[in-house]
Amino acid sequence: MTQTNPEIRIVFPLYPGVTQLDFTGPHQVFSRLPGAKVTTASIGGQPIEADGLVFSSLADLAAVEGCDVLCVPGGLGTSEAMLDEAYMAQIRRLGAGARYLTSVCTGSLILAASGLIRGRRAACHWGWRELLELFGVVPDEGRVVRDGNLFTGGGVTAGLDFAFVVAAELVGEETAQRIQLGLEYAPAPPFDAGRPETAPTAVVEAARKAMAGALDGRRAAAAEAASRLQSV
Image (cartoon, rainbow, N blue to C red; front, side):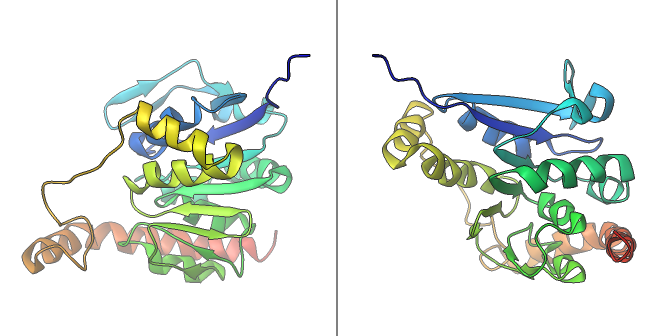
């Protein structure tokens, strides 16, 4: 008798202003998992523009019955997404029934705003990590952080490392390694500037200056989302 792999339902809930690599990187890995059914969805199934690319033929998020893995990507649109009641209602609904809650970059802020990860440790992009505290979530500097069934990746490119960690949890290390080999994922960056702890001081200062205005706006949105959470 032929044994089939059990279906693994993975959902990426997209929103306007999402960072495409936050979900396309993990999507590439997850789509190769045995038995995986990967769904990208948005409110109303509307097309989503991300970094100049348009993603269409999306599922209607409200019509997705459930999932084993909910993977929330981050992006410049995180602030608006946290305050979008229709979107957040679906995050809470799907997250409540998921086996695993996961996110990449500032997607952890969206999970935090849902109230599903209060009191737990989570990674986030270094520029916005402190905002997790507004939701009672413990910021963790790790590139990939696990706290029970919660898996979170740090900044954008951490999504690939994150995806292999989740893949190993779902299908075992050997299968995850075969996928890694197939994708020839063997990072060797030309600069050691991927984290503020290692990047040149001038580069870090310039990055902080560029993000300063956005940080104020995102902090205000996070504070508003946190206040709404008290009444949920």
